Amino acid sequence: MSLTPRRVPLGPIGVRADEAGADASPAFRPEAEAALARFRARRDELQRGVRRGELTPRVARRLAAEAAAALRSALAAEAETFSPTPRAFLDRLAEAADDRRRAREAASLEALQRETNRLLRDSLIEQQLRNREDEFRARTYTRRVAGGDPSPTLDGLLRFHEDASLAGDEAALEWARRQLEAFRPLAPDPDDQRKIDLATDRPDRVNPRLVSRYVEQLDGAPPDDLEAFARHALEARDANACVAAFVLARQAPEGTALGLVRQVLDGLSQFPDAAIATLRCWEADARSADAAAAIAEAERVASIAEQEAALPGVAPPTEAELDRLARIESLPLAAPDEPIGLVPVRRGLSPEEFQTLESTSPEPADAPPAAS
Image 1 (tube, rainbow, N blue to C red):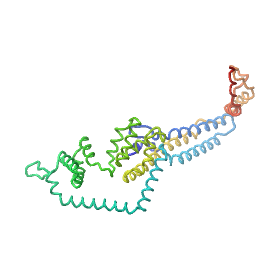
Image 2: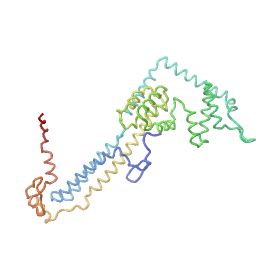
Image 3: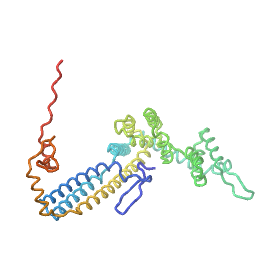
Image 4: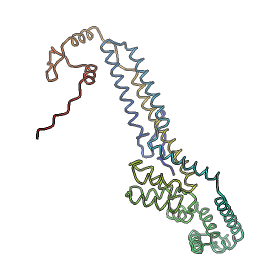
């Protein structure tokens, strides 16, 4: 189970894409494209300088290379820590883990007694498993072929698990879980795998298959249903349900404004220890994958900028071109609604003059209120 789609390499420059063949990092693409657009504006400015004779092609290429290097440096620094998920998820997980650690270090006598009782119960169950092994085998193992070794069946183990659950026999229940886990490679059918997952579910352990099933079934559900699921997961302190609620909150398009997100983040203190530990690992892996995809996207854009920085086809203007440009620039400016004509006697604004005019023009005043 992962918090982000898996990505596979697509080329030598480090471009990545998910299994569906989409872009490497769709979330980082707007930032990368904006940086590339700024570089191209600078490149166009340098090309105009060469055409006007203000710069030599060599100087223009050097300045374009410097702009491409600055783009690479800026995008690399931004991509190293990039993640489309709000930082609050990682920070709150770290805070919850630190609170658990401090609570264990400053455990009260009552907490130590509960932990001792749990260890004693686990030890007693292990002892019963050794002493009652023959009893459990006799109830579940059958000899399918004459002369063959007895072996369990999936239906027999599931029935035994159900009987042990109804009887409250913890030793038999634990033995059935272990047998079902060992039987998993022999049951390739998805329905059988689902039955095994449900039977071996433990509230204090995380099963990625169950988490994935929760997420698939609740993906796109109404907000009220998601909040109800998160509330039941917190009340039951079920590790799989809590992890699924966290994943659903993390994938919520509304971000931290969604009630589910606030409910999950505020309820991290009620998550089981296994859920907190698993989510910290998954969150770190997901952010590493996001950063790797963003770095690949930054590398792609930087490679494009460095290629365009060579300014192919740029050459110094001839004397005739410089004379023509000088004649045009000596013409008076045309009014905004005045045509220039085929034989120009007036000229339009250059890009630099247009930008200067926009930056110095006063903002339009508010219209006077209409008379009542």
